[in-house]
Length: 308
Image (cartoon, rainbow, N blue to C red; front, side, top):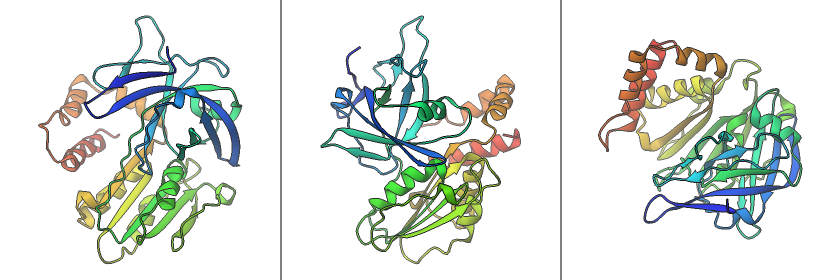
């Protein structure tokens, strides 16, 4: 396949699958590895410019192999030829994109086990992965005067990038939960940004994300709350913002980046009856324009009833 497989998902948006090559590797902390990618495969790479933009990373079957990259489909996704084993794929946020140098930076949370973590711990210049075109979720109203960014280690790269690129005049407070003091990083934040580190969570103990948001004193005036971390914790955060504080959907974005005990969760989900799965799926089968937050309310309520 060519360095970049092209797909047109709409008249205005061209999506690409890129073959990218490791240029540099840096161990930021005990729990995070930074990988800078380059190569001709980044020709045509289009960043959304949104600080929490995310993409899929397609990994090779073994560390030094070429990844088996998918081909684009007409609906804006991808597929593999019949009989070809799909590459292992994980979702990551973009830590940085240098268009002039054509370099893409991704920070990997590393730990025991896991396809992506194992790859990042062993990677070196010359290794190859694939990525698709990124898209972002951060979408504050244009008139915000302040923003609160809260994340655990998985959301740290996106939260840091959002803080570093905060709109001029917007008061930014960033609270990051990492496992220990050894996992804190130096962040080059703009003047006036307020940074706080909290230790715990991240699979090493109970997360405090919900507590952090619930105890935060939100400033007066229009603002935006962005939170990313463990899925069950972010469910509680979203309920607080939407139902306790009554914020409009335009005033917050809450994203579950990972699930603690994911294998056990998946096993329980796979054990659901066909009726339960059909009911969950039907919640999203609604007319275009239906309020997404109301659908999420119903979906999360069903998951909780099912013990998920």
